[in-house]
Length: 220
Length: 220
DNA sequence: AATTATGATAAGGTTACCCTAATAAGGAGG
DNA sequence: CCTCCTTATTAGGGTAACCTTATCATAATT
Image 1 (tube, each protein chain N blue to C red):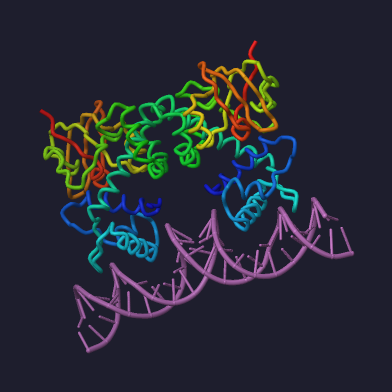
Image 2 (tube, each protein chain N blue to C red; image 1 turned 180 degrees about the vertical axis):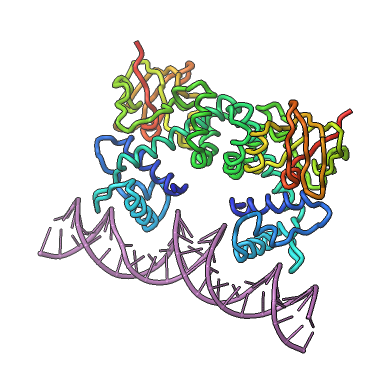
């Protein structure tokens, strides 16, 4: 039996692995940071997951999902994004309101229900944040797709997807940026860690922290 | 905060109260029976619910929901039936497959989501089993609606609703009885506790245990 | 090599829910 | 009155997740 807490850890580990495909291991400290749980709690959970064969663990190095763990993670994320899509496209939730609700739904969604929902919505490709419904850890995404921090000055880009954490979304919603939006880079200042962009004839400044949560693709 | 276990108890107490509106109290033994939990577990939960002000308890007499408890129960049951309706009408679940899935969904459904789902489905009146979406404990239902065990011989009735427990539903599905179906009573034998009915030109025998789970209304 | 920073873990506690086994409290009948 | 049965409750445990505090072990840096 997989429990809610377990699934949350697995999901977070998966996402950390995706964010940083270069380094194979996720550090315990990252998990402590991301989950908001105390060190011994994280430690305890790591052991539980190792004992269930979902995680590999090297002291002082970090953790990595086994293939079984990855499979579980991808499945939960799929359910999460299906619900997000449903809430947004069918129940008229705003895109920054769907995350928490989906967070609860994903854990009690059977595979049967997941598939039924998927079919009902005619197999959408992505969630409202632009993230793919079907996930794989070694999905090499379109090499044209880069993080906004790597975008070059005086070029136009389209926003492909954004990370679905409530704070990021709420902010993006306020400044009217979402997948599909076209932007122009006025300036990318790595020293001061901000990017100035233009869309809808308005100029907006985006800090690097946020710019790391946005994936874009160069136009033409 | 209401937890899943608590909510399950509240719901079951509510349903027992509805089944037997004459006797105001639900006996602990009935709860033990219905929940399948051990006596001390039930006892402990009763105390928890009393301390939260959701339950009244008289030793050796039984329990009764407070108005707050009733409110919570009705809310959960509403969510349950909304999900049942959604699964059945939109996701093509068969009517005997929806209960368990709804059982899990109801507990993590926010009021916001409940209302959104309700609106999406255009405010259905009943769930696929014929039970009302909006519930109240002192709903005196239509006085014309009676339990099948009280039906009289040689009259025609329409099935209004059935109790949504998996065993009952599976059986009813096999013999093709559901809300809306018209039946004729060939014989009602209280001594042997069975009823013989006719529908679709077929004769079927129904024991009293099942007949107690079926509500019907006399035709013409 | 010594110090500092970071990571790991032991010890002990909490809450929500569940259990078994044993005991106590009420009521019915001989 | 005392036994028997139902009902209630106590005592003692377990597990999944969390916590704090304190003490290790190792890595990194000076």
